Length: 93
Image (cartoon, rainbow, N blue to C red; front, side, top):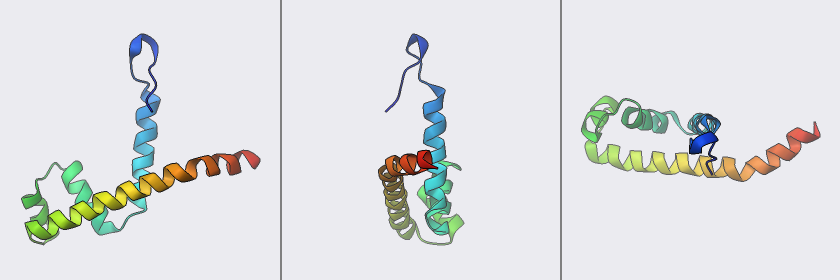
């Protein structure tokens, strides 16, 4: 959920929180998945070029990219489910 600051502007803290969550989730998935996602999202390569960089066919890359996205989303979901528990345990320390 995004919060709006003064004058209806998005709160920059929301973006930071999102980035931190994504980086943490990326750290929890296999290297191949992370590399595939970064080639597409960070380097802006299409599937053909990303497949060449990864040394596989376009079809293989597309399947692996789909699985990598699913694994990343699974990690993000797991982190969100764990967040209330972590907050409770951190407060108790």
